[in-house]
Length: 335
Length: 251
Image 1: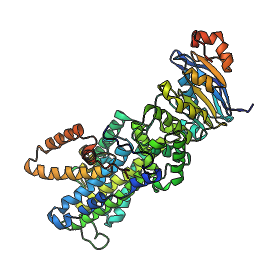
Image 2: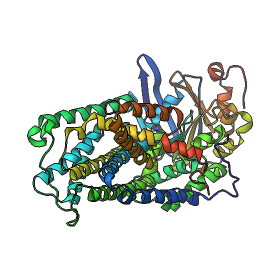
Image 3: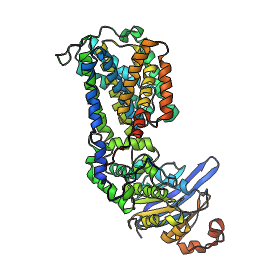
Image 4: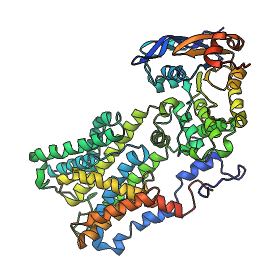
């Protein structure tokens, strides 16, 4: 077994050091985040795309918390993205164009819907879970469609006007503010997510994912835990939706749609689940591929995404980052 | 004798027409070392499932320390000190042994819902988990993922997870199941070292283990208690020999 390195007991790290090492920032992480600043200097014409990528990455991060860590498979998470988008859009349309408070309201609205639907979600598993998340997403699209007096229906929500960000930065056409804002939000919620997954709560989520049957036998209230992370994830998805609404100053039904729910899962699988960066890397690959391929071949670009998805699932253990992990022998926790 | 820690009264359960538990009455005093034996399909694991709340009895009561816990959820029974292990390893494959036991310790301390503090800051919990693993000879391999542990180590980890909850009553479901005779020494040590005041009920097919550790034996046949007594009484009981021990003589 070459993959497993056994270390003699006397040279192995102590239990404290082992667990502390898992939460330490690694150099590659710091470089990764610095690299995300590079579009400001290197690709200023692509800042709008970069902003969309950061927003999508935040959405993927929110799904990773429930899918990758807690094992809740969802095909309807755009429900919360859309609720966040419409909340932020409507608030701005009705005359309150302040961005940060818009995010907070969007998080509250999406979190509240997450709390209510969580009572169903945490009771079902496997196929039933996928179908219920899917069903709730479909219900939301049609509800928003029929409530066109509020949402603008198929025409989308028009008349969203944002104030200057923090009273200083205009949401300009080139996307400097938009990318700075989206990237900042992504980083803040990444820090929160990182703390969550390295906490005892995060460990208990992994326990639920690894063996739901054992959890009651160690005294764990699994359903309450799942409910909690579902609300957190919903709120985070809502923030991502709000960012999109605020930076594009419009909201379409597509924000709630099945395609968005499915795409985000594809991104997560491409990048690798249960590792926080998987969703971000997946979003970068997916969005750049779409941008490039759609230019060449607007109708068939999903063909290539589909092919890539099949190849990644077949040949890599856990997405692209899981594959990289195998190539680079340094395992987490090895001192 | 102390008042029973765990008590069942008139426990009934049927699956359709199949009776799996029939007016079962068991008393487990503090410090008990009772074995539950019986032929395959006698309902031994079902009884543990009834006691721990995985199954709901059709009738009857389960009392823990005098309190009726029949309506409590499984995790609430664990919090009150009624804990089990599993016949088939029911572990967390991709958690390290250390993480798994630390998780169980955090659950007991009511810290496992905390998301704002790092796990590595809970040094007491980690130390306690490591002590438990050390006492079961698992310390050297506790940083390896569970699925990479040897089978016998996984059996010990089953017990480690249970001990991390600090049980008052421990139900061991075939702790030695699948462990080759030559490798069962650590398991036997682990069972011998269980705290003296803990009430222990273990299901076991390995008669070496039963006659070595049990002070009383309960014989379950077709969902009902056939008889209960000291190992000598059970070994001498012709009915037990007939249904369970066959002609072989143990003890």
